[in-house]
Amino acid sequence: MYKYIDTVRKKRSRQEHTKDQQRLYEDLAWTWPIISPPEEYKEESERIRKVILKYSQISVKTLLNLGCGGGHVDSVLKKYFAITGVDVSKNMLALAKKLNPEVSYRNGDMRTVKLKEKFDAVLIHDSINYMLTQNDLRAAFRTAHLHLKPGGVLYTFVEEHDKLRQPNVHFSTHKKDNTEITFIEHQYDPNPKDTTYESTFVSLVRRNKKLEIYTDRHLCGIFQLKTWSKILREIGFNVKQLRFKYSKLPKGKAIPELVCLKPAG
Ligand SMILES: C[S@@+](CC[C@H](N)C(=O)[O-])C[C@H]1O[C@@H](n2cnc3c(N)ncnc32)[C@H](O)[C@@H]1O
Image (cartoon, rainbow, N blue to C red; front, top):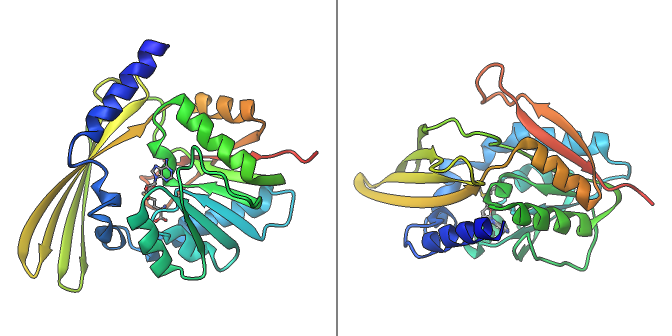
């Protein structure tokens, strides 16, 4: 076990020493609203709201979004809830604040952050992909549990689990004013026996027709679906698994969603 944790640590620190790591949330954060515009978040955000309202045992007025990124989900959910967003990246928080001046944003790591308030609901959206070990997942879910009122729910979902389909490559082109970005995503798992995989982004940016090329490496977590539920139950949640048939997914595919109730009393 310790040998395994050591390997993950070494892998993570090797990544930390490359210059092109997690640039999307640092010097390339400005590209986020172009490659993934807030307008595209309506369907999934409305779904999140619907599920939270259906399964919560308390009335939902406040929501904590752990790993809120550029605040694109918040831009939809702020119509319904008073939101507090937490993210580890200051550049992403700057984007979120600009998009949603009415939302309260804090800088922090979802594994360790401690706020004074408790919330009616907690959301961990795609940022959960950055939990690389079971201990990371456990710490993030503990944070959610700690900040949730009894009778409230944590909503999270699982983009990748069990075995990665690989190599998995997508690309898309986006334009805003004089900037055109072709964003290429490549997912690859060099060792399917451990809990991480590589997600590598290449951005071809044309500003006023001049080409710039950026490479960006992300290390993401992958676990068996049953591991997610096991950890959530250990922490004290009652877990219900649903399936979200998101319109952007291939026909017949659905994303596993986890609705986690913190029992009252
Ligand atoms: C894809 S972005 C989230 C985008 C977001 N769903 C939105 O609506 O704009 C992933 C985010 O996870 C954040 N993140 C990664 N690890 C984190 C951690 N340990 N604690 C808090 N945020 C984290 C990154 O800084 C990044 O902003």
